[in-house]
Image 1 (cartoon, rainbow over the protein chains, first blue to last red):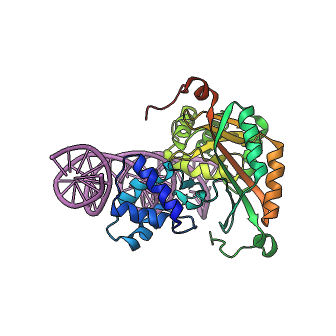
Image 2 (cartoon, rainbow over the protein chains, first blue to last red):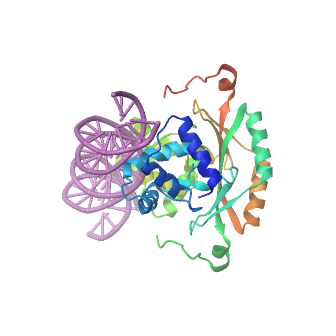
Image 3 (cartoon, protein in one colour):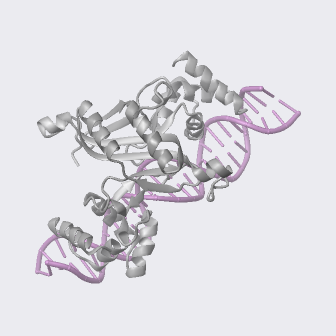
Length: 154
Length: 154
DNA sequence: TTAAATGCAAATTATTTGCAGAAGC
DNA sequence: GCTTCTGCAAATAATTTGCATTTAA
């Protein structure tokens, strides 16, 4: 986990008047030591590798805190469960494109989209805040081979 | 409900080899007789006003069919439940901007965004399909008055 | 010392499913 | 008549919560 980020996260914790517990430390460490997206359940497993006493409840209670801190973001990949993306600390403006078939997710940034969204928000009488763009598309594998690697049987 | 749309929906039903039942008719009628977004639970209530025998299970079984037909779309408003938007039949390319505080939702269309997304998709090796844009922002009421009408107490 | 945080297990909420009877084609 | 659909009620899955206990500050 990036040292600078770690410091920022603990600053946030402290400013909120929250306590530094071994469980929270483990969860934070786990949450930001990967660049992969994960579910709450997966984070429990990762945190327990660092500190086995971490309970499901504590992870579920810590996740909203991290989301509130803005270092972690809840993203919608169209699944039944929430997915978390730890990469907003380093790239606050990225978006996701998802293959409708193999569910491959690619992150991207684009300044034009940023600008455009600002314009649109203002035009509609809003002050832009968080933006979520999700493009669902067909990846090249599907186009070329009629199927992609991980295409579910369904 | 728009007559043209009704015909298209029943075409879809028929092409899939599905049967036309009173319950399905009521659900379809309810689903497309409003331009408001709704939850499954709300659709149950609306459909029952037309045909009281409609059960929860049938609504939950019919919703994925309508989504598959592309006339209804599941949208993510950041709630714990799914939200459905019946306006994609008339405006297939619209997007949503949501006030982070009062949860007001405004629909908008923008050709530039369309174009930009096509470019981005292709650049990343995808063929554009469904696009979801959700902008979370602060609405003017909040900016002006420090609060918006429906701001939850939380 | 004392308020906040934890683990556990039970509760909640949205959604899904098995099954026996009803109904479309 | 043969399937597909339906309602019901029970099952599931993700997440939340109450409470007694532990722990950080």
